[in-house]
Image 1: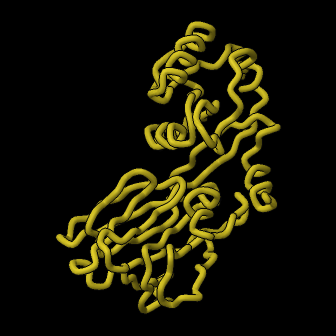
Image 2 (image 1 turned 90 degrees about the vertical axis):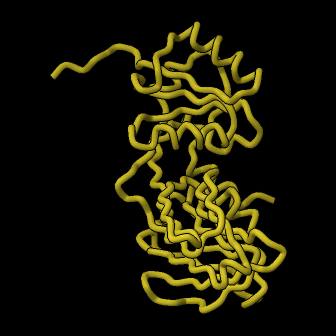
Length: 259
């Protein structure tokens, strides 16, 4: 079977900033462009928020996404350069991510299923602390967690909100999820848990009408939840492309030694 030597078909997506839009126009003129549904590779121009948006929009297509940073942090993106893009794509290393599946039930009994690439988070929606019962694989681990909230993070998301909540950084190949409380009041000394990636986490809101809680899967928020179940979405694989010098695994490792 002959191997095609044609250049990959590229689609460019950008953040709404003038800088990102102008860069997209220049790159489309230089390299040509097709619609994302027709592309071999999608090139995302912006910050980590834009990258997450691009991943969510193409979550079922399994098309590789290569990001170039025109935002702030850019943890999931490569350095922005206009020249030599095809050569960079040819040399790029693939990183496969598996998202989380959140199934949230609100106080009216309605169910919502949403995917999360970074984390599923629960946050109190009133001045009163949230009261959450925590079960793992059907076994109750905490009868009551009084807190501002809690989150379940993937390795890729462990350096985002999870790290800000003093959760652990997880190497990509660790096969773990982080269960991290947000400002735990009781039990005061509980700092969270490391769970096997195949775990099922059930978070049940105690007294959800008096102490309302919202659940979020990345940027999608469900208000007034009564119960949230989090599992790994093993039927979905997302592919990111990184320059060898900006490998995601290395970035996560460096974060553990950051001053």
